[in-house]
Length: 249
Image (cartoon, rainbow, N blue to C red; front, side, top):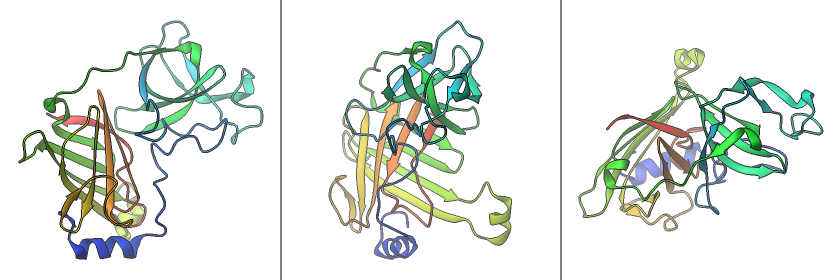
């Protein structure tokens, strides 16, 4: 479906369950006291970076309200087995008194989110406005790849991406039940954000096009690239909404 052809759009529509906004990375806090990720892109001040402070050898994640009654809180029962160590970088989202919602990205791209004591995290300064070279390269996640190159028009960037659902599941691979999607467009970044819609006749502004058109929003937060989409960029359960690392300049 690269290039946004009508045939590709029809295939996307047939595979959608609902035309709801994505429910993956960036889906924000589902309810007060719950932490699933860093929140929606393009809303408020947006995600920021933080680093685990020196001090405690281990800083455990803290359970969300939906996981255990009375959490997040200081009760030791709220502490989870997963933990971070000083120097780990996290992507920060919403807060509740005493705690910040943090997303950690492992070396192989696995994402883990949860509450952390706010006192254990040092917030980093906002990065400077990116240059085009800060965007360009190949960005990867476990089931997604996005490539960004200089666009044909001055000041634009050309984006191509592929995503799958099921390639990490040997049973789905064996049954041929892997779903796929792709995205392509050319747009000019605005600060740390790059967003567009794939129309039948080419790239459109993010807010333009039909509800079934694939929409992609990227936010550069070095060393990460964050993405969200509208769940219309591929087959069932396929999404570009996750955290990427640049693997090739």
